[in-house]
Amino acid sequence: MFTNQYPWQWEPAEAEAFITRSPVAVSTARNYQNTLRLFCGYASDARYGWVNRCLEQFGSAPRQILDEWNTVGHVTEFEGQPHRRPLTYDEVQALFDAADGRVEEIRSRGRKGALAAQRDAALLKVIYAFGLRRREAWGLDLADLRHNPQAREFGHYGAVFVRWGKSSNGSPPKRRTVLTVPERDWVVPVIQQWIEEIRPLLSPGAHPALWVTERRGRLSRRAINEAFEEARDAAGLDPVLDLHCLRHSYITHLIEFGYPERFARTRPAIPTRARPRSTRAYQTSSEIDSSSLPCGSGTPGHGRTSRDEEDGHPLAPAAPDGGEGPVPDLGSGAAAGRARHPPLARAGLPAGDRAAAAAVHGHPRGTVRHPRVHP
Image (cartoon, rainbow, N blue to C red):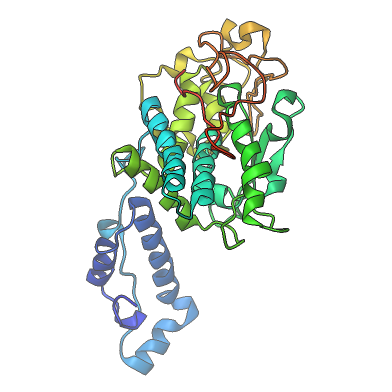
């Protein structure tokens, strides 16, 4: 315990020292204060009898030690850490190249760890391609890879069912389904190679986890962080960038690809009442005018422009409850929002080729080469 004292001995100065000396985010500090404030309110409430009982037994009683004058106020719309920003396209490319380079370096030295390095490279690409949080990627099972009947060309990898989403207000982890978008179709052969060629070499047996270790267990969340940090350092990127920046990059780049702002925000299932504040940092890699995007604001289905049906692929309006939507019709090759961007050139294939074999094998079971990520 921080104070090494009983609740009836606590003083406001001790609560302030606890918060100021805790290396936590502002929002976390506020949660700590709210918890302490509720407890002190309960202990000092005369209806429960703790005040009189403590006075009789110890000569002092618990009291409220947190008030408006010594608590963290919520005065700004965005409270995220300043270093958390979207990666640029060049930075994402450098990160992936560094992750792939580790595989080749380990094999050239004849050392162990090549399979783990291939797993880490595939993991980072999946996190970026679907905008996953660390716990969401950690909790993925093989059964969470889904078929999307509106995008049959992606096969069994047309969607990812996320079961370990961010909780709020004490609720269980939220669930959502994240679709594979055409601008990220290069992730399909990445996942396919990992599941069909590399993962079996780790002998996971009947383990359900998508990401397994050489000891046949689920990859830890700490190991996911370390995979990003090793690739980031090898790529020479800013050391303040962390794994969550890939999620920021995912949303920002979707918007820059031409997807409506609401589509990019609701696909990660951000709570409706928290979207404007919690996603403000996702749009900082370029100047984006949300009013110019289809369905960028207003009531779902209203304010639609001609861009809502680019290339003849209509966008369904967002669900009234703030669920997934608007969802582009991915039934054919191109989706809404691609008209202003040429198809991505994929490794080993001409631009716009929809074939599934996008892998370039520099050696047996080589790492699938991702395409350039620039729009």
